[in-house]
Amino acid sequence: MITYKPLWKTLIDKDMKKMDLVTDGTLSRGTLAKMGKNEKVSLDVIERICGKLHCRIEEVIVYDENIE
Image (tube, rainbow, N blue to C red; front, side, top):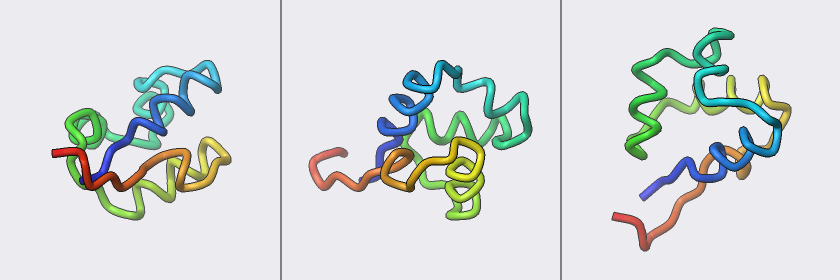
């Protein structure tokens, strides 16, 4: 299972809110909702987030077999 916990931490570290990514056009509300439920999103979305936040993919998403 994938989780976006690293993204939420990265946003905190950068003093940003989740909705900032919607406001600036990086994400749609629907995509943010999917991510909030740890649902899969396209790699294009992950790439946009990494570009916007100037971070590595590991700072956005992680695969964890122990998550249901």
